Image (cartoon, rainbow, N blue to C red; front, side, top):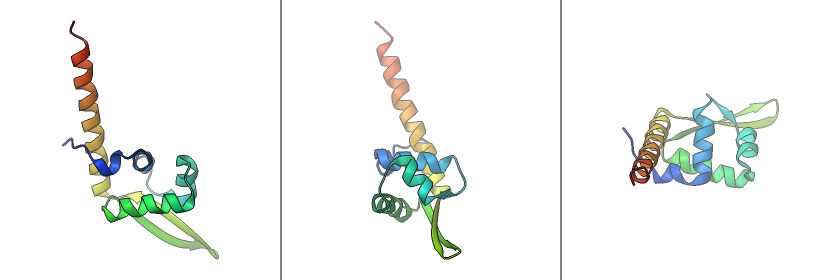
Length: 101
């Protein structure tokens, strides 16, 4: 079912969700570097997605170093798929409206 999702549509969150949709778990550093955010900005965006039920956060240690990873939940995958479908419908309608002259 296609459904435009305002929460996902924000450019930074759309980038994050797109990255997470392509992987099982993603390391915090990978996400930070891929999207070009500071640690605090990424943490805030991930928390927003986690509170919506779209992302699961896992905190662990590798030796004595903390490691944070994230992944999309099934709800997050469904929301992302629906959002992409809604965007495709918008683009398709725009394309059809431009063709006839």
